[in-house]
Image (cartoon, rainbow, N blue to C red; front, side, top):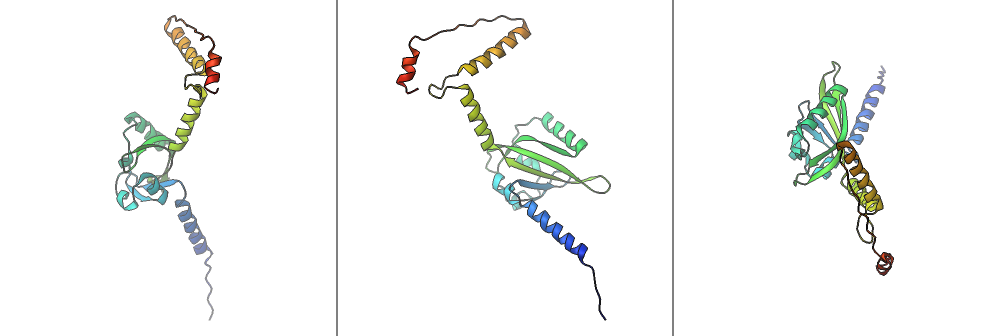
Length: 193
């Protein structure tokens, strides 16, 4: 007697599980919570960014990461969008285990069952500290002279535009005093500019 069993479905499920496990161990931090925000699982990137091991964070509410820098109104709006659309994404400042606040780009997705009820939330985030530092440096270079570290023409122009807008909006007047330093080129040349 010979018996055959089709194991195609089992193989597909095993492959899906392998794929899910490898996706969970991505370079982005991932956390899975229950519907109340209690952490159920985190990946290695989460541990690397936050400093919390899985043993330290699992079973705790995800608000343990909160830096306190966002207002209650911010969180109300975030949860409103999450409940209405099932997803939220944005910048938030959280806190590492050592107390250091850091900016992150966070995405949260609601996981729903067949009845449409939220059973879990999956959060994924990246530490964007270096990205923000680089952007700040580029912005500073755009508005300040590299040699003197004084505001440049672009900075002054932008500030004048803002001042003119304020004057117009509030019905005020203003004045601009323009000074020229004689032989400034000689000073610049002596400093290597």
